[in-house]
Image 1 (cartoon, rainbow, N blue to C red):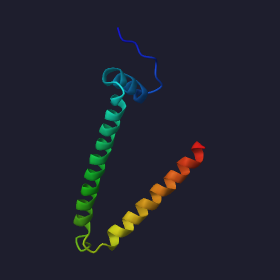
Image 2: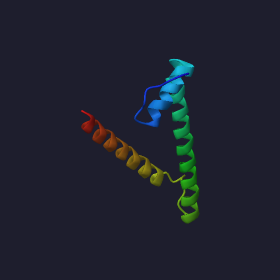
Image 3: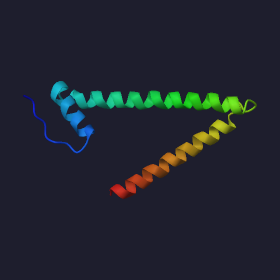
Image 4: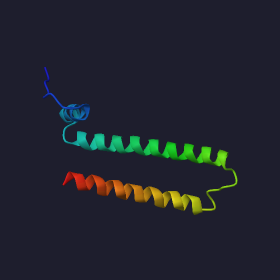
Length: 91
């Protein structure tokens, strides 16, 4: 019978089980699966948002570039702000 220590959350339990069955490569496997899950979700949301935005504002095109550059810059600034905020509270 396999016994694991009681974990605080499901992430730790999943890591313990994966490490037990797959060894040290289990953590890498979970990381790759997590990245792929997040990446496919982000791509789907971006495509969905683009279609809805084009339906609402058909005269604005992504080929113009100004609107997409603005949103790209804004999202980058938000990500940097979040990283700085999280890094400040972890220290």
